[in-house]
Image 1: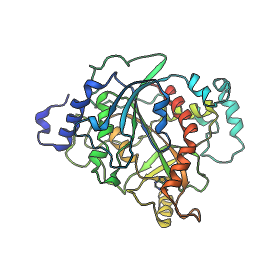
Image 2: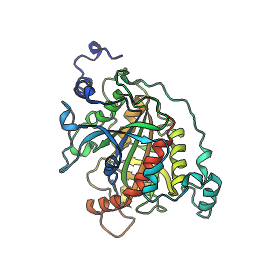
Image 3: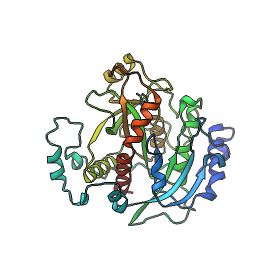
Length: 352
Ligand code: HPA
């Protein structure tokens, strides 16, 4: 699908294909879903039956994160189609499967806040047409295909941030690599600060759309048309059918979901109060330092994207307390078990 001659001298293409060549022999199966584990979710990979691991350090040319103590690796595992034992073990309400949408909606009905789930799961029509996958999902990986009981996934334990000093093409390289491994859907997770004043630390927000105008687009430069088109449509980055699956999973797990727009800032500094106010005026509900660029690159490749953000703190200026990275990590870690339950169940519901 990709012709080397066309991209001769293109450093971005060369690096991507170099990484692909370096790791493809160690990919145990063709994953259907990629999951980027944000703050607080890193342990999710450890709770699954792992079938393979590739350390970022062992992939030639891979932009290894500079963050100290950073666990950077791809983990290959299977997630049960329905939460099953894992969900029950983690304190999911007994018989969550049996909760009808109507009942759960009634449970949420008193909350006069459109951003809660409130039985809206079915209002989002599932089954929108999947865009043609421009990526070169390599059919040579064996296994991992249609499995009625489980979804073959590749998880990223550790992502690359622009604020570490990497160009955007490096930041999204791991996403493109998962595209080359064959993923059809990508679930992006992160920790963020709230902009919407109805949100509280510990809330989970399903991302409905994004604003990325303050950071460079990862698509700048020669277009790699083997991956996607020069001017990709962004009218539905976060796909309806995946959002529907997330809301359904939240209902089954008894987890209240917020919904909103995520806005990416460059970091590593937290935003100023004026910037948080600006984000609100522009239509954002949460702010963070990742994700939107990854969603752009995946959407460019025709990969269906979903996103969930852990609201780890009130955005700067919304509380009297100065922000610290440690506090943010602590809330994200405390929200981890709920977040893990949601992600596991949601991926099990993904129509892939
Ligand atoms: N701003 C940006 N990124 C973040 C925040 C925040 O308030 N909290 C967690 N990640």
